[in-house]
Image (cartoon, rainbow, N blue to C red; front, side):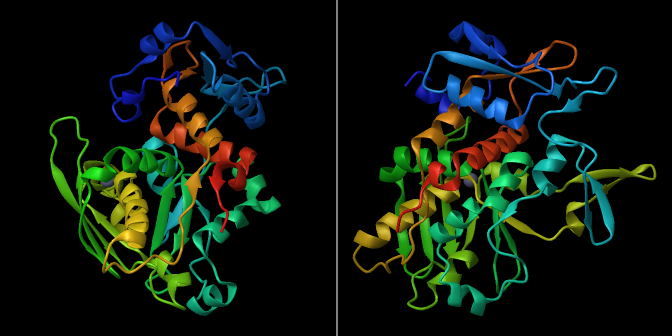
Length: 343
Ligand SMILES: [Zn+2]
């Protein structure tokens, strides 16, 4: 591996100067007129597996003279309407909370429809390779893969980087996870990888896909309660400035459960454990596992990529930008090229 493995989780202090000191060769896309999503994807795959970094512009130069450059990662004029309130998706934080997801099921999808279709996570992911979904992933800007709990109508989100980071979390800490209970619910003690302390905490999972005839919709209903810092902030309040005051927009949004790397890692661990632990109820579905090219594209984006701003300054991509690009990578690689979806 060309990338230091401890940077996987602890790359907060890692900056442009570190990237420049590790790599001397860069694929520099910052001066390319009319840069496309495919150009960026190709450059990421070219730089992957090699000692090469990549430079992506924050704004793309237009081919026509005098036309305004456009932001590469997402369109800042997009809005989202929630209960009649229009929220602009003009900042990375707002896009992270309210931007679109590529959904596997709709809010209106019923339990009956899911049962008839015999939907499993791997089948649902394979549906992402339908040409319409692929086109949306390649051309659009999304936060992750989403689905709806068909009973409680709650939105679930699997951000694009979470399958990669969750598997790594699971790989490193599986031995330290303690399964206190694993039947139709689970209670698991997992180690924290916080910067400040090493402390175990509890992950609770409700409704696991273990019931004959019902697992097709049970996996869509799984609630994971995980007390980590990242998850607390990702579900926190979004603020909006309106008529001279800040208003709390999250209060008006429909609540959403987003998987973080710990909860996804713990879910994969629970799946494995359910097959071997005496007394456990066996999972009847298998969650998709990432393929190497997708993981490599994560590494290139998170550890070897520099974003060049308008004024020539440089920074690492923020979480929102890396997430959006990873979704595009998935579009170009295909869900089947990004995940093991065999059943
Ligand atoms: Zn977490």
